[in-house]
Length: 486
Image (cartoon, rainbow, N blue to C red; front, side):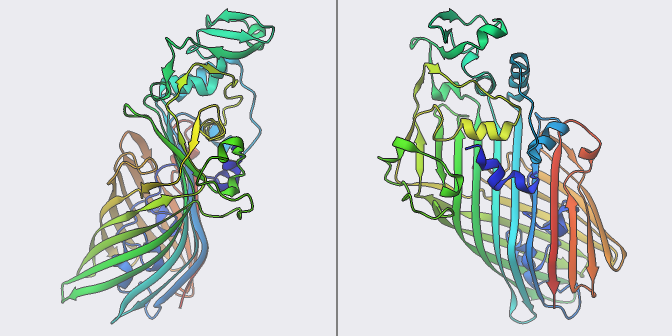
């Protein structure tokens, strides 16, 4: 299960403040995406912008390949620790006291990962017919907030204070006093607690929430100018998407009953062993590595009002829809937790340890099932943009979660920023992003322009502060080098 990280996340130098621009490199540095994204870049954000007046005269077809953005944010890790995870460097083995310290630091702290890539996108803008676009996009998201009990269990394992007694490898059983010498701790084979004092899994995981998803969407969108006079334009847009799912892992114990299930495609190389034999949704052993384990649909709706070609007012609602998971599907049983043999986290590679801890091959009891339906992480967006001059434009927007899906934003995100063209071949962007109880982030970006808009390339970071501060880091990269207009 630890291969999850290297296979699909960390290889892209991931980040974590919510990706409100879902992999659009030209908007990352500005922070506020909604008003000014156009062509295939507005698919999944605001399809109403597909029929806006083209920024570059005469260029009505835009296409691009291999764009994306990834980030990782943590309230718990330091910048140095985050870099180690992002680049999969060697991790130091933790002592018992270090494990205790990390367990205390981790409790009730959020770690979030997101990766959005555009394999290909194309848009055509016709004055009379409207704007059409098609995008193939992969979206990977992970978030985790652990309660104190689970945090301690992840790091201390069988020596956690939850267990009353410790079974040693010499056959002795001793009280778990919490201050045993290292030699004795090294002899521990398992931690045990009497059934009378043991907790059910729902209670053990109290106040914990973990989610991991990987979906691919094929999104076809249309936008049209609905009204125009000398002062105002009104645009509307709609996008429909077919979705295939490669992964969904959900553990939600924020209410009285724990909700947990997992569906992972063969690419994750999970050996389910005996529990697969009675699972009606188990995939054939010869199934392809990227065989989807879920399929679904989604809809995006948007509107934009343009006043005197200067002021843009936009609103949209995206990811209205659901996915049905029917492959390698397992549900977590609400078992009585009486013993544990795992040693706990050996390093501070938090993401890998959490995925390993929550996998269907862990010590928890999982049962195969036939199908499960989840909602997409629906979001509402509102924003405004103002064109000060051909060289400077300003924007502000807000992104708000509409439902409580575990990989959705936990709180509204507010962003403001600007684009400045110092030269015709270069655009600089900067902004500010905040919301909820997260620290302020300062995104920055640069886009290079050639052939009067015929070619664009650029990159951006979601937080310049991370370069100088050690705590609350956001390691990120947004890129695009194959974007063309004709």
